[in-house]
Amino acid sequence: MASSSNKPFLAASVTTLLLSSSLLSTSISYSTILTPRLLESPTPLMLTQWHASYRQGRKSMVPPALLTAAAYAYLATRPGLAKAKAYCYIAAAVLTVGIVPYTLGVMGKINRMLQRRAIVVERVGRGEVVAKEEREGLEDGEEGAWVKGTGDNAGSRYLVDQWGFLNLGRSLLLGTGLVLGYVALIY
Image (cartoon, rainbow, N blue to C red; front, side):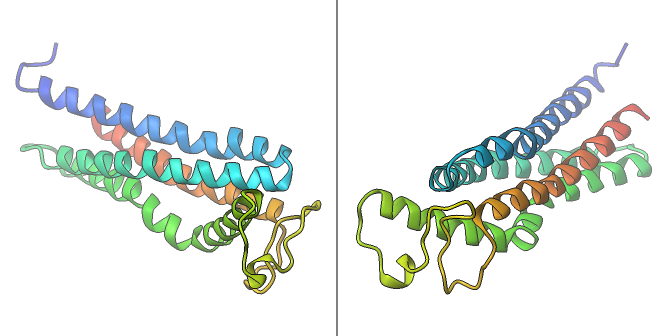
């Protein structure tokens, strides 16, 4: 049985691992559940749904990821903790918060391209006047709903598919952090 001095640390560890596993599950579901469903939709609807999911994901993933990383860092500071365990917790913190620079650096271009396309589709769908530069090249075909002149020639479906694939990198970061956090708790 855990001593009473270890109970708060154990509770903090388990809570952090639960939050970490929740982040991982959410991230994986974006690639394995959301992306295939998006790709079944007509292009304008797909872009609108992707944009709504992206905005919601920023709200629901970033704060918990920062909290989880801070919790892992806190766990690493426990007095008397073996250095190997502290390093595991620190690595888990870095990997967990690493989804933010990964998103900005690795996924940023695709995110921006999809956001531009979604905004144009949303504006056209609302019947708003769209500037000629924004309107030019907007089409609703198999590769549909892209804006000429933005430097992106890939189809929207390809971009959403790539987004789902690249999102697996975030899942890998979160999963590795979770495993290291678990290893630090168990060993």
